[in-house]
Image (cartoon, rainbow, N blue to C red; front, side, top):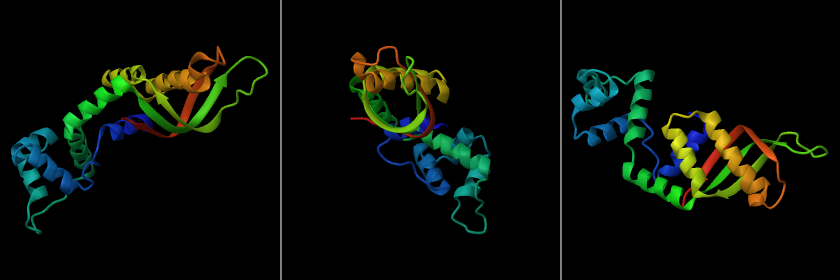
Length: 185
């Protein structure tokens, strides 16, 4: 998961996901009404394995391995705050969002201009069309590169060309993203 994907996920949540594997397992058990069988099916392990992970007896308790910790995290992310995520996504698609980033920007401009890539801090409000395009690309399984192209095009129009008022024909490249945060509403 790249910086843009992580930023989108953070923007859609209002509370952080549980941080420990035990807390995540408790959340999954609550989501599945306490059924270790359902949680085991979701995680692709046996019911007995889930029971060993959540038992209160210290001698019988076994922590999940690294692969299982990743599977638990993915299962929790998929089920964390579904209605809030849908509402915030709809709000971003309707009203737009503010994009905060620190990345390397290069410009392809007419001769005589300074088009060498350099690191910039940018905070820019972007319209709902960009949010719709980003979410559609993410839903279609687009990678970080395609999402970067979408954001570079939007930042080029909004930030560098000031919504079409200057620098006509300027092309923006966007790479080496240090962080990408989105503010919705």
